Length: 283
Image (cartoon, rainbow, N blue to C red; front, side):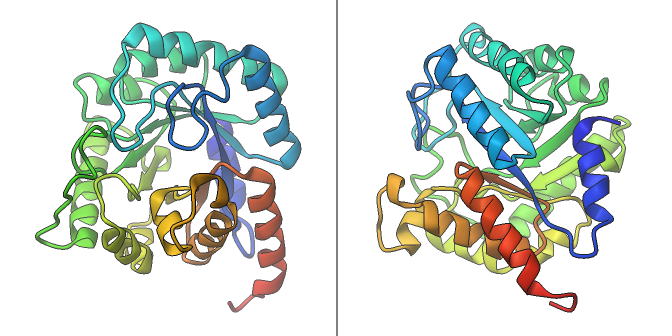
């Protein structure tokens, strides 16, 4: 059993389950929140140390930005960013490691380094991705998105409604994983906030998050510093979205999220600790 599944098994045994905190490690020059900040070995190591000290459960390494408007990067470029970062995280801690990629070749290289999770915004739809993950012991996070990062926010439309569309898509991708022999305990779901969704879509999805939790797979929620937080907080800039992001994380926890993907690990962990002590057994 890999590290992440061991963590999730322990989480399930808690009287009041508390979400695992996934810290974001973007080794890219153009991510929407911290692009270009982690462009040296020492900067990456310092960021990892800070997250580990704050009590992070999982570190999610991304070598290609998927922000709205982002352009793809080459396979070689992504590998040159991601693989050293895996080694740096391993050298600084024994936390679970996730790699945020949709490319089968990057998945394969990361799996060879014994990462715990493939976090795929494309839900293993790229040719070969499903087989790469199925032929390993790694866990996978299947995310819903509409369109491609370059254009996904231009005019997202859900004729059947965003929640039914997300549910149908995720159920189909779960079925595809199970069809190639993946066991249910390896699968995590992500509704994909901000990926081809308007503010109204995002809010509606959040309001009905329990419907996705009801699918009975661990749910990952990632809204940290996203545009929806800026809009709901009064059109605040990215660097001013920490408080709103933590508030959304607590609401997601209350609604049954198993993993919170965040930039602000320390603040999120503190908020969860306080919330855990105040919710009570019957909350």
